[in-house]
Image (tube, rainbow, N blue to C red; front, side, top):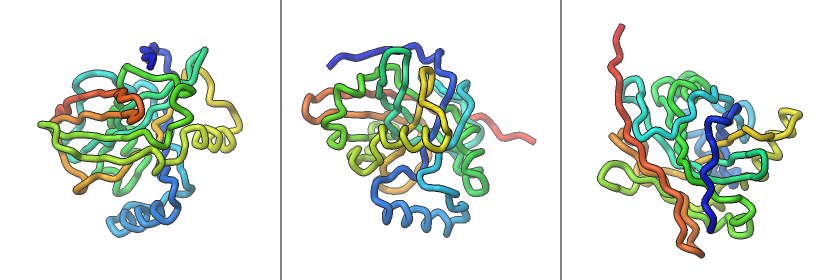
Length: 217
């Protein structure tokens, strides 16, 4: 399968789709779980968070403030001048600020993307079979699930376009939701994220390390 390496410095809009599960009952269960921890429920489902395009990073190391952050594997959808591409990334999030503002928690950490992408049309017919995985340091399994558990990226784009009243145009990039952790959210020194195609054995992968900056007053 052909691999593309688009110019991600051309991205001018970054959108993070939250609460993007396909099963409404599962989404509501997750909302209720977070509400019990003090996280306010979303105003809409799915909910689209805008973050600064300068937060997008393909670097092998990202800097975060303090120890209360973690990443999560997500499909990454990118509209270029000529194509719709899909890759893999991590919606790295500040968990401490998430308790009082999910939008803020999305903005304060880099949004990580791999450099390699596939043409979405090349995998669209088997998208639901795609597998999302992530691994913490020493390749300990952290997340695993199939794309069928999430809203289809084209569905997400259509919903975003309807709410925004404009098209998902060239230079737009969307993080398309994540799958559950295997044993709860944990802090890690590095994270590897993967999007794999079981039919062909093709895998898109990206690894990054997390450097924690001291919290000073």
